[in-house]
Amino acid sequence: MFKPDNIENEFFVKLGFSFSPEELSKGKVLISEPFLNDPNFNRSVILLLEYDKEEGAFGLVLNKPTELFMDDIIEGFPPRIFPFHYGGPVNPENLFYIHTLGEAVEDSVPVMDGLFWSGNFEQISALAQSNTVDDVQVRFFGGYSGWSAGQLEGELKERSWIMCDLTRDEIMNSSSDEMWRTSLRSLGKKFSIMADFPEDPG
Image (cartoon, rainbow, N blue to C red):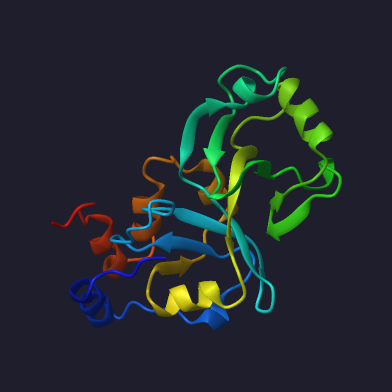
C-alpha cells in the first residue's frame, strides 16, 4: 500500500483524520483516502466480511462493477440483472457474494444486521434464475481484498483508510459510481471536503 506524500499526510493530520485499529471488526467499512495511489484500491469502498487480530482481514470492494454480468459467466442467470463486481486483487477467479436472504440460504455467514455473505450457491443461483431475487438482495464478486495479521492496522495508522459504519441498505442500494463520494459525505463536513478532491491533485 502506497502512502500519500508528505504534504497530503500533513493535511490529513491537521484535519484530525485517524482511526484506531481497536475499532476494526467484521461489518466495518473502509473508504480509501482520496490520494491512495494503489491501483487496486483507488477510491474504493470495502466491506470487511471477517476480521481477526491474529489472522488478518478479508473483505470485498463494493463500488467497482466490471463490464460483465452474471449471465456472461454462468448459464441460466437472467440477462443483465446481476452485475459482476471486482471484489479485490486476491484470487480473482473465485466467486463471492453478499446477500440479504439470511436463513433462506443455508450456511450463510452473518456480517451485520440483515446482511450475510457466502452460503449455498445452488440455492442462491436457483433464486436468481427464477427471478425471485434481484441485485439489491444479492451482489456477486470476483476476487477479494485480504490483509495479513497486522497489515490493515498499519494501513490505518498510515491514514490510508477512513473507517465507518454503513447500514445494509446503504451497502446494497448505493450507486457504485457515487458510493465513494456519498459514503464520505455521510460522515459529515470534515470528510465531505475529501469527497470533492480531484483524483489527480497535480
